[in-house]
Length: 414
Image (cartoon, rainbow, N blue to C red):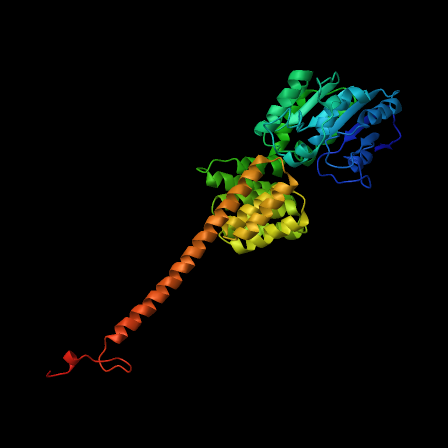
């Protein structure tokens, strides 16, 4: 779907593309729709029907509609994050964009092209990839790629795009994925968009402004805390505590502190924060996953299994969550349940070799455990029977016992 949301000034347009997991169907807002409307920026939103990485037969027809509708524009900026950034770069030429703002962009996730990134393997293996979207990348627009250089996969994607397009790289240390959360938190997202929209972007000035503001970002401080080596536990806790202090209402700041406390062995404090987060976000699955992991680290496997089950119930069609849950069940000794969850993970992502191998190992190990259990039970029963027989033999050697014959030689004085 192509949706136009025009504001008074219509000579400059931002064309947006959905990020992953924004939602299925079209009864929803486009990417950044409320933000752009609130800031008086005219926008056209290209909405995909799901997490399909814009591999639609009509995608170039939709792009042509956008190009025609904005043909009189002074400037057009293609804008997206992650999956949306992939589409913004790939379709910039088709929509006639003069500039592109790509946050945490992906070069591709097609397994035939990018075998080294499996973060979206379930979608990547399901999608029918279009050859028209996989050819040489043509993006003559002025393109800015914002990414976290400390994330090796994101760095590699950004470098590949830059090599083929001449894009300007804007590495932002510890901004995580997606970079949009950090930029919004430090109040630079609007400025970055407007700089590109009015053709006044200065990479050096923007980098300096980011460095000046990052000390007030829970995302930055939290990521820095989590990346501290194990030999610096106090530094890690201090940074995570500051992240919570500078943005008291930030769930991400709270989460970083909880993760850091778990990593440094402060389990009671960590779990207390996780419980606060769970209430605050109404038990949103993405926050329950680290909660369950923290429970495992604290040694509370029973509650961890319960929380992990809640996550899987809320997101039943996500293979990697089934895999995660299966691992947890297996370690708790719930072998049959682990096999069931692993089989479901394989069914959801049948081309994922890791899942198939793991299911095979689980089934084989379960059979071995079953045989061992049977042998152990049989040994216990045989031991009990042997003890009973030995008891009977011992009783038969006692003179005068009822039913036992005494030999002549046993009679005293004979």
